[in-house]
Length: 191
Image: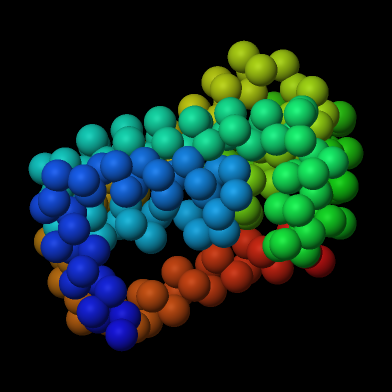
């Protein structure tokens, strides 16, 4: 099943709508969706190394757009949609910890957490609730998310063929590793 999904994503990288899907996943991940866009960015960049930088730009723009939505949820809809998102992913305690951290550390929280597998929606919604300066928030989101996506793209551009060979030979282990990192991110914020 993992092989079929991987092959499907590789084929989608060739389609004209590939970047729109990548953008949509990045937007959703920063505001409401639990899976990071890296799960598409990696195989798409592997399939089209010549577009790796472009895919990183798309992910960054999508993530910042989603961050604006998450921030807006925190400011305008915390009592409704924000509460629902936090409860759906069982992030109540983590949300409070992040909110308190913003009061103490401000944008440094975004810079530190944007590179990790911690659910980014938690960071964006809590930023809105905390009322972080919007300009500082956007700059921090663009810097940290861009660094993450461009690091992936840069590694694929430089070591693309050996990385592709490794992924294809050990696809199940790679998929399980990515899943473990995502679960670890959730576990970290839930503990």
